[in-house]
Amino acid sequence: MSSALARELVLSYGWNSTSYQILNPGINHWFSPTMRAVVGYIRKGNVFNVAGAPVCHPHFLPAVCAEFEAAADRQRCRVCYVCAEDRLHDLFATSANHAAIVIGAQPVWNPQTWHYIIQRQASLRAQLNRSRNKGVIIETISPDQMVSHRGVRRVLREWIASRRLPPLSFLVEPDVLDGVMQDRVSLVAMRHGNPIAFLVASPVVAKNGYLIELLARSPYAPNGVSELLINAAMRLFASENCSYITLGLVALATAARREMHLNPIWLRAAMNFARAHANRFYNFRGLEQFRLKMLPDRWETIYAISNERSFSPRTLYSMGASFSSISPWLAIGIGLAKAIQRELLVAFR
Image 1 (cartoon, rainbow, N blue to C red):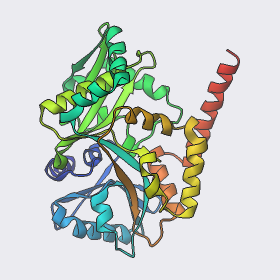
Image 2 (cartoon, rainbow, N blue to C red; image 1 turned 180 degrees about the vertical axis):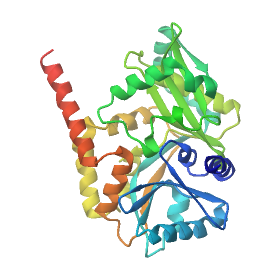
Image 3 (spheres, rainbow, N blue to C red; image 1 turned 45 degrees about the horizontal axis):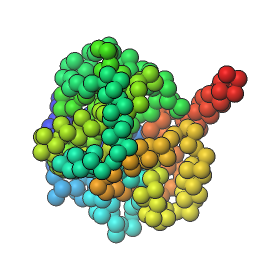
Image 4 (cartoon, rainbow, N blue to C red; image 1 turned 120 degrees about the vertical axis):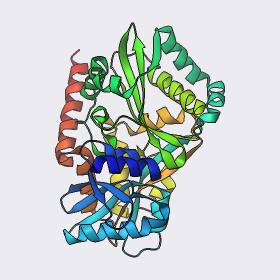
C-alpha cells in the first residue's frame, strides 16, 4: 500500500529529477500525517539522507520539510537533502539553520530540438553510424519483458563487473529492474538478436520529461551504442511532446565550478583532490565529456542541503555511505585494489 501511495504522489507532483527514484529498492518512505506528501530517504548513522526533495504540491514544501525534519529530530537525527535542485535551494537560501553545498550539475536537453544537435555534431553522427554499421538496432521493450529478459540481466551483470568501484546505490542504483518499472521507458540495443546495452528512463512528471537514470552496456558492445540508445530515446520523447530530458548528476562538473567556489574551504580542497586523483575510481571527466559532446541546452546546479548551521564532514561521510552502501573508506580501498590489479595486468600483458 505504501509503495502504491508513493507512486501516486510521484506521478502527481514529481518535480525533482530524482523523484521517481524514491521507488527504487532500498529507499524508505515517510508520509506526512497532515498533507499529501512523501519523502524517500536512507538512514546512515544519525543522518536521514533524502533522495532529492520531498514529493508534494509546491505550496506545501516548506511545511513538509519542517514536519520531516521534526520527525528526524525525534530520533536524534539530522537531515541531508541529496541531489536537491533550485526549488529546495531557494527555499532554504535565507535559513540560518540550513547549509548547502554544490556537488555538481546535470545537463538538460529539450528533445524537440535534438535533431538540430545531430545536424551540428559530425562526431556524434559518426558514432551513430559506427554502431549501425556493426548491425546494432534499438528496440523498445515493455516493463514486464525488461524485468524477465535474461539477456538484459546478463548485460547488467557484465556492466557492473566492469566498474572500478563496487556497485553504487541510492540515487545511482543499478538494480532498477527490481524496482517499480511500469512507468519507466526501456530501450535495448540488439546485435545479432542479443542484447548488448540498454537504457532505462524514469518520468519527471512536473517538468514534462524524463531522467535517463541507467545506461548499461556490455564491455563487448561496439563503439557508439550508448549514443545510439540516447538518440533513440530523444526521438521517442520528442514524439511524446516532452520538453525536458536529463542524464542526471555529473559530480564535480566543470559547469558548476563557479558555484563550487562557495563551498567550505575543506570541501573545496577535497573536491580538487578528487578531480586530480580519483578519476581512476570514478570517471568524472569521461562522464562530463560524454555529455558535453551532445551539446546540452543548459546545466542545472545540484546541491546537498543539511539542516545544520555549517555543512559538516560527518554529513558528507554519511552521504557517501548512502551511495556506496558500505564504508566509503572500504569502497575506496576496493576501488584502489581493482585499479592496481588492472594496471598490473596491462604492465605484464
